[in-house]
Length: 153
Image (cartoon, rainbow, N blue to C red):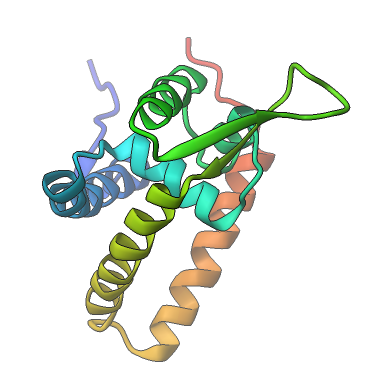
């Protein structure tokens, strides 16, 4: 039987996942130990720091996150007083999320640290390589959104 073999070491989705998990794990260790945040909680906070007034659905979409994971993270952040929720005037079912003062305080502590880590990570690439990486990642993301899901036999 000559079945194709999946070489994970050269399979792009696997390599990107390992890279993402490695980087996220390093960062999560730092902010998790200091502020007791999980990766989904920090992602919600990071999205609300950039896009205040987002709904939970918008947070899930922007972060390519599972809605259940976002819902759990939002609940924990609300309980901890790190975010606030209010309801839209036009549609009382739509909640609007934003960082609380405490959330902004934590966000302003974590953000410079993780941006510095990103800078150190990218310092191994030339300016041209960084621009090229950005272009390639954008193109791959666009292509991934265009392609229909594969049909598995």
